[in-house]
Amino acid sequence: MNITEVTTLKLRYKLPRAMADSIHYMPERTALLVQIHTDDGRVGLGECAAYGGGLESLEAIVLGDLAPMLIGEDPFRVELLWSRMASRSHQRGTAGLLMMAISGLDIALWDLIGQGAGAPLYKLLGGYRDTLDAYASAGFYSGDKGPEQLAEEIGSYAARGFHTIKIKVGRNADLMMNPLHDMWAPDYAAVTLEEDVERVRAARRAIGPKVRLAIDANNAWTPSVALRFMRLVADQDIFWLEEPVATNDLAGSAELAHLLETPVAGYETATGLAAFRDLIACRAVDIVQPDVIWSGGITECRKIAALAQAHGLPVIPHIFSSAVSTIANMHFIASLPNGGLPEFDQNPNPLRSELFEEPIVVSDRGTVRLPERSGLGVTLNPDTIARYAVV
Image 1: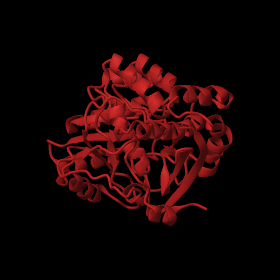
Image 2 (image 1 turned 90 degrees about the vertical axis):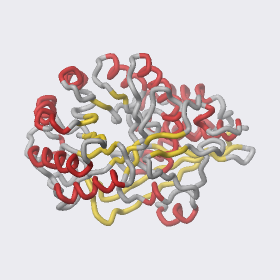
Image 3 (image 1 turned 180 degrees about the vertical axis):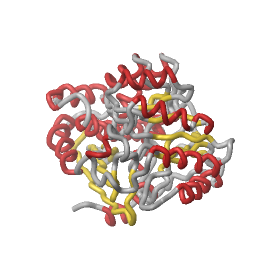
């Protein structure tokens, strides 16, 4: 089996109502899928994280810089191919956009390896478990959604069987150092810090004491603001605090991890093994959150997970894109003894819910099973591709 071609699929879904996290305004959802074709007719599927910019810039790196390194090669030599892509392109940077591009190609290589071996990818990677407890990722800012509407939304996820739910915090335009001021639509759905406290309290009231509640600040706060906020919600039994400060503020995150009883989780916006090495070495995180479509693919994320395990830390990956992101991260998580809780975005997004002919279904107990077909074990729905393709 040798690689003959690399192709891409650009997808875009325009939201009927814009949503936002602490600093990012989202009027649409996009995805860049990659397909690696082989001379025996197989096609490996992957996804590149397309956050922070247009699909075209990322596609140019995939097709112009990286794809030529793969043509004619054996996909089973994934470690060699990963090293070549990273090393030959190192002058473009060792993180960020390059790592996003490598991620999608790496996932597609692993899909081909699973197909060639005739095994589901999670089993090929170790097969620690075949069923995962999922968590609902929701509670975004939108329009005039207040605490009452938020509570109704969050309560519905608990009623559907989710045992862990995460909401957004940090869209605080009243804070001087919040990066929101420099982002798109900074006034959209913004709230004060005190209003965010009430949002957390409303979510807790809606789900009761037995469902776990996590909060995600998406890099919006300084350490002092994060510490103040956590003191204000100290009686709300927060399961984890995600990305409270800037990703490169290792000292600030480490300070919070030391002072807080609540675990500090992060950082999805770190990319590559070295970035996570530094987070772990500084004890800046209690929960490690790579993303296989963003942090360097399955090849790099396996190393991140091993490093986390060596330090006694769990891995709960970031998952927030198309269904390819979901299934690839599920296979990765299921292979790990220290992995768990795949993130299931609850916002409307047909690029996630309608992309495969085999839907990924969360049971009424909040669990999800891995597919038993070889590789990723999924098939793209051609109607969905045609409906949302960017041409």
